[in-house]
Amino acid sequence: MNMHAPETVVRHSIVVDAPIERAFKVFTEDFGKFKPKEHNLLPAPISETVFEPRVGGHIVDRGADGSECRWARVLAYEPPNRVLLTWDISPQWRLETDPNNASEWEVRFTAETGNRTRLDLEHRKLERHGGGWESVRDGVAADGGWPLYLQRYAELFGPRA
Amino acid sequence: MTNTNHSWTALGDPTRRTIFELLAEHPRSVTDVARVLPVTRSAVSQHLKVLKKAKLVADTPAGKQRIYHVEREGLAALRNELDRFWMKTLAAYKQAVEQPPKE
Image (cartoon, rainbow over all chains, first blue to last red):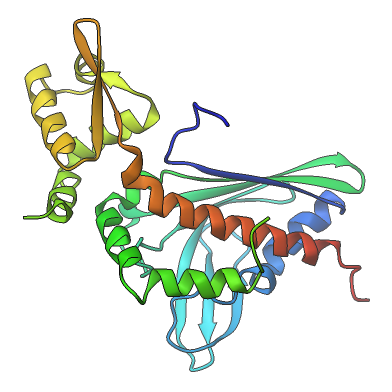
């Protein structure tokens, strides 16, 4: 346990057996393929998720009914080493339209060997979502919404190790 | 009223939000906070009082002063959900990236 880790940051790392270029390419180009399908803010089923590969681009969920949801803004795009994006989703699981209330997430890729890459993810500035914490707690207490969503979400992947 | 409204209002004020973000970086005393902000110690104290009432920060005594820190419970729910989201997403990513390319 890192006792000094600020509570406003989430960190994860994973090592994959792939060269850094491929690790980066799959993360960005195929983001929609591994992002949990349950994770979306659209009323309709998602037909595709696009990671626009440039600063100023977005991650866009497109619904089967033609609706769109741009829930992340690309702040840095530096293949094959790094991306930095915003998280424009409020704790109530709605699109956050005020950029001041958005957190951000950074992904760094490091080649460990020619065929092995380490990915470090840091989702930070969570305090910016501050205004909605109590709503998160309210949602957790309710029958629908978050708990249901998360339960279905977790079931997709089986029990946590 | 309930804590819900306290919390909401507490972070609605830009100065309080800045103070909260400073405490999120690391715990500080009133003096520490006042040193980096263009407000008086007494104003900082007032803001901290509001944040404390909203259960967003808590304090512990340290010698003659009190050290304020972010109350863990407030962020816990959001943090846990994001933690889970990324754990699942990265596990699925690993599977995707380690599949032999189709071609």
